[in-house]
Image 1 (tube, rainbow, N blue to C red):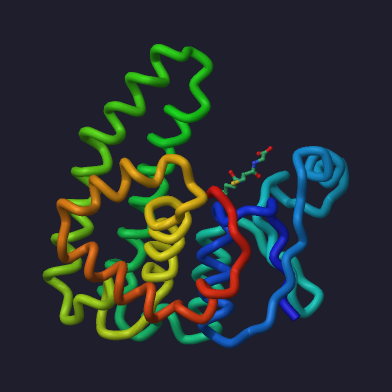
Image 2 (image 1 turned 135 degrees about the vertical axis):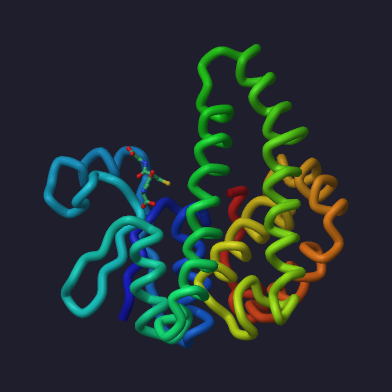
Amino acid sequence: MFKVHYFSAYGSAESLRLLLAHAHQPFENVDYTQESLAEAKKTDLLEFKQLPLLEFEGKRYVQSHAILRLLGRKFGYYPTEDAYEAYLVDSLLESFKDTGAAFSKAAFNPDEEEKKRLFAELFETTLPKWFAILEKRLVSNSSQKHMVGDKQTIIDFMMSSFAFSMIYNDANPGAGVLVAIVSKFPALQAYFEAQREENKEYLATRRVSPW
Ligand SMILES: N[C@@H](CCC(=O)N[C@@H](CS)C(=O)NCC(=O)O)C(=O)O
């Protein structure tokens, strides 16, 4: 049985949960609070003192993208035969780091004025530009239901994690503005609907979380 250690939230663990559910691999959530994370940091449980952590077959795995690739290889969601396809997957995955960094810079900024400015930049410039690039990749792919190739890969779980945690999530108070931005990208919207169908069993039963 897989154990997903994370907060009681979607966050950086959700792509892993989506993949495990799609691969019909039972998993258990081990939920943390800030307090229990602080306690865990005093032990050698978390190699980089961060979550998520995945545990299975007596081993522990950290760094969400590395875990995603590991599970992708294990369950057939990573293009191991084709180096170019692997590059396409990886370059999209890397772009999540850049967007995530821009989001964190805004969200955790202690200066309220600067925070407002950074969020405006994120919504007006960073996200629309990123979505345009994602959509361009999508329409140049052989299937518009997947980002790379014609079957599910780890990047589809990453895209779905973002879509169904942040954009199409009624529990996320910031979802409205993201829905409005994505509505300008019809191919991306259609892709997310295809991914909703692809992941429907998990999405129908997972717990509700604002992020
Ligand atoms: N590169 C790491 C980043 C992990 C990370 O930033 N985790 C956050 C939660 S999303 C965390 O553990 N924050 C608590 C802390 O650093 O004290 C990964 O992708 O796993």
